[in-house]
Length: 241
Image (cartoon, rainbow, N blue to C red; front, side, top):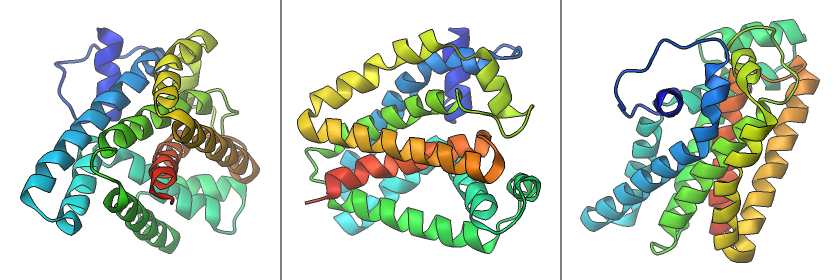
């Protein structure tokens, strides 16, 4: 239960009781539970959308559903996305990029990136058929959190920090065991579920390669970027005609 509580504490604001004082590498050891945490996030978001759609028209229910999704995660992954927009997209040296990403202030790239991302996610949520929405939310939340485990096996941009601690406790066995839930969900969705999973993996690999070319590896912010963009990939796959 220790690592399960830590997984929820790392990825959500959901209270599962007090967590033990973490030891080095515990975040990586807790990663085996990340897909399950994604499942709970997806279920709660789907339930929220169902309830909101009974009260409000679609144009109001969709942004409120998105707000619920952000609140459940404490906005942590959006913060990573914003930092990556500022640090990875601008013109600077690798060291300067890392300094920018560590700065809590938002730059122009972060502002534009956040607005475009939120608009895209809102539009995708609005376009989903109500009967498919629960599965889509669950698949996107589960597979995106499993892809963080793949990120943990990439070269590190910094020798310390969240990503380094995560990588130190992460094992290949954890990655393989935790892959069972996203794989099962993708298979459950038939050909479109497999396409959504394949595209999200492809986008994650592109993110890792881009981060290596810009800053020499991954950071905690790149983890957040990976979660947000791969969630969006799944949502857009099901929004496509």
